[in-house]
Length: 428
Ligand code: PMP
Image 1: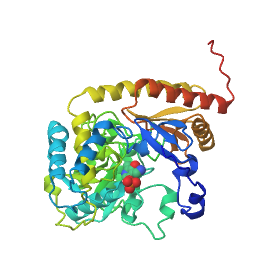
Image 2: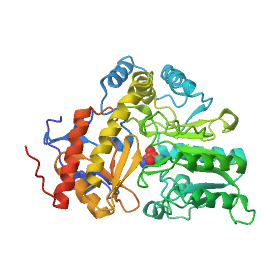
Image 3: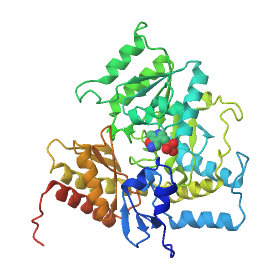
Image 4: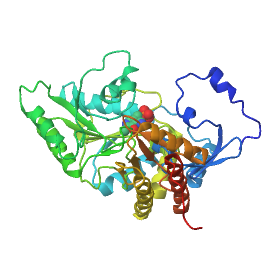
């Protein structure tokens, strides 16, 4: 914790009004450990936001931290463009051995600029280059980042408006469930793809999140995803799974599409791939589609060596056997129970998401916002998602000890009860 008082006025005076999370969590954080963050007053918060799923292994994991300290102490390379380094070799080897090979994925690893948006830009460019087509199919409520290309694939109107220019070369299709549960949106998409006069240009790619992180934790069914994958193949389009938020264990397995049995042509990863909150982005691409020329998708930070060090340590710590997946499954059940308790208080409320990417749609953005604000007052960092911010969304570190997870859920349930004016009468 910092010993000198923090001048909070500096933020309002000098930081751009574009700042955002700091508005909802209006304090100054000074340290963090595991699933907790501490502010300058010494107040401790349980973190159910985890850097928006960039901290799946928590804050300052001791083994990852030690690996990084050792690397720095030894004057290891900090920045090496995309030159060969020992740290990069060690990461690729660990990723190949523990992630790609066991899943029989032959994909090449292409390092992009260190953000999710940059990985998405690269993925879309690859698909366009492979197919010679420009159109990309993206989905309602999909979120892929805010650089122009990725933003064109993003549904959110507020973010799109920030573009300042028309966003082209993307056709929007309805995600699974967009029109209510009984409507099979894949039938509509198939009709659009197969009727030569549908008016839709042949797509280079279909890009989607299996669970829409920012769009309200909408979860595509396995059947729907398989139908979309089949359609993509038939149409000669590449299937891009954007696993920037849902990947790295968030939905229960390393990749969000694993248990569904999909074999995407391209996968984007960022957020938690470094394991430590360090910037890092990459694209996994099937070898036959590895068409980008040297530096064609250029970037000064295509090799954050410190991130390679922590990413390797994370894979070797968490992904060499099945025990972490079992922990995630157990914690996911706790989260489900907690969220169900909230859903039971609100008519029409329903649970959303999958694994430890879960939330509850409370049918009102105002209500969700009030509950999260109250929870923050009581020591819990949590935010909302969805088109109207109506989904209270839990993205706790996957490593959160069960007891702490329960404490966080209790704060949330209590906040919901308070906001809804329900009084506890449990005998204590
Ligand atoms: N894709 C998905 C699925 C995301 O959730 C996000 C970020 N929320 C992005 C891409 C963009 O990542 P970044 O903010 O690192 O550019």
